[in-house]
Amino acid sequence: MSARILLAQLHAAHSSTENLEKITEVVRKAGQNGAQMVVFPEYMMSYPAEKGGRAERQPLFGPFAESLRILAREYGMWLVCGMTERPDEPYSLPYNTILVIDSAGGLAAAHRKTHLYDAFQWQESKDYRAGWTPFVPVETPWGRMGLACCYELRFPEIFTRQMCDFFIVPAAWSRGPHKLLHWRTLLAARAIENGVPVLGCTQTSPKVFTGGTAAFAPTGECLGSLDETEDVLEISLDLTQNDQTTRQNRRPELYTPKNNHPT
Image (cartoon, rainbow, N blue to C red; front, side, top):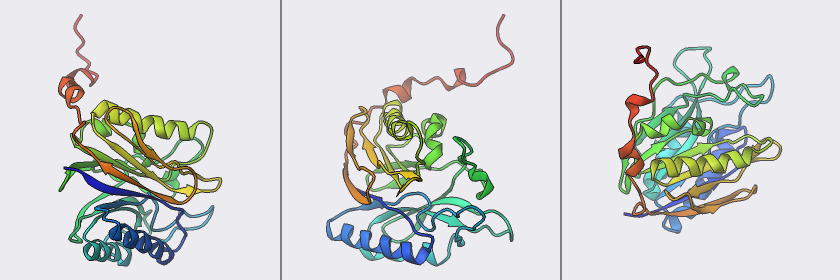
């Protein structure tokens, strides 16, 4: 079964209210054009704080998430969107969370990013806390959906363990030497390794985030991509090319180091 999925490459503001207006407009147009799922980037609820500042944060069932659930129910479509989640413990760092909302407005999943971006002169762990629970694939009308958030794209183990039919990767991929090349190469590699489509939706922001939203077939073929401007990319998800050969040939018992090596 195929699905029409819209990847919305946007530049988030600091205000969740302003971002929700942007999201609503995209969803409204997507609904009119028959989209069945809309994917938004990481950090879409509130742009990361500037130095010394603090990004807006909300609880998992706060007004931002509730507004997304109402939108999903109204337009009968799935939504994937990043938010800054305020934890229950006071004075704690927030989670960098990706929401998956089904077409009935139910919260199908909330993934708290497990691998924070402490690399390439960034230190995400100064402003966010890491989640500890791997993403559990979600059953959709089109197949089993896996998910990874931004920097998690660099860890193939996250993908191989999910055993899904397609992957969504919301991101805010930072600029830097060769970074756009890394983004697209890794998306293609995860598609080829797992034999399933991989759809990556990233923020765009001058001097900060790359843009370059793109989707790849299991063959590694690019199904579509965007440049650096705010735009949307529609992908017709086709699972008929999925190839389970590599998955079936894996021998995970060989990939875990053991102390009792034969002599």
